[in-house]
Length: 179
Ligand code: FE
Image (cartoon, rainbow, N blue to C red):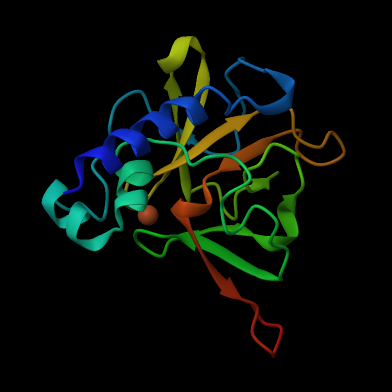
């Protein structure tokens, strides 16, 4: 493994982590009833060894999904992506967000005001980097997605699910319009 690359990537993750609160500098943990909260690690439906995740994921995906890193803002492939469809977990395919709930938060990461279903995502209090944030994870594999904040659109849910592009895949809406 390329050591200088890992050091550089790790540094980028630390810097990006400090920026996740975006333009509002909101450090309040979100408390709502939209998704399931946990206090400790659940046993997930898809439970793989660390070695298996390393083999399956790219180094960037592994750093974010399994090591709770953060991609640099305005660099992700879905930050400015507005095709109709469904965003899935890049690690396990779990359907997480609908394109209709995506909005431009101006913070450099894909943002959604609602999860596709309340069972799809779990939340966990994150006290890292001197902040109190609510981490969001895929409920099926435990992959780190990002954080949820309470500065979303007030005419919707008021929530902002701030997600790393690298944690997501995308399923384009099919021609029948059924999905
Ligand atoms: Fe997943």
